[in-house]
Length: 254
Image 1 (cartoon, helix red, strand yellow):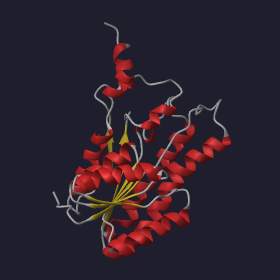
Image 2 (spheres, rainbow, N blue to C red):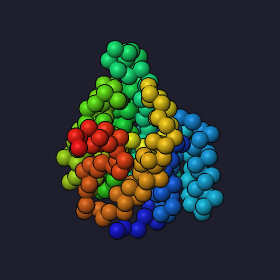
Image 3 (cartoon, rainbow, N blue to C red):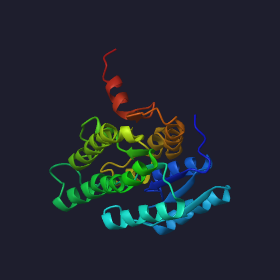
């Protein structure tokens, strides 16, 4: 496993959830971490937690749907750090009224703009720098919904995350010869603030059984530590108490 001390990571959606867990894990391994997201106060909270633990972090507030702003952040990282080794694209959301009979066109646009377009803008911005340095790892946070279609997450989120998976693999196809690797991380249910948007509220008991943000952070750290000649194209992480599986198991006759 490679030593990450002194290398540079950029994490979007870093103020909460999987992004926060990823930032804390990577910083804990000695990486210099740049934190991006829309809510400055949350980014400052995570940065303070990192620095208080002896790590290095700075914030770069960002709306990933603004392609010019994304490019400006990446240009700033290149100018200040001189390199970018790991990117975790974790910015994302879902809407509450997500089923076909409820989904509005503005809500569709919002999900696609953040979850798919935003991920594209970030990948597109970092690839020239990674080509120049002849290497880099891009981790795109996708979803179980990017592999399995069901009724819980809605068509916009399914479409966005399937797109993220395809886009991630296309990076491996085109950019592997430059030493660039990309991984689509496809979590099942994770106890993060995105659950607050569920049409049916999730109980505290169920949340406690789910994958936690820090679990995802440990996965990101594992991926980042892999040697440069190893590419994990995609990986699924889900709770042992997988509520979809539990329902199926309980339906099996005695």
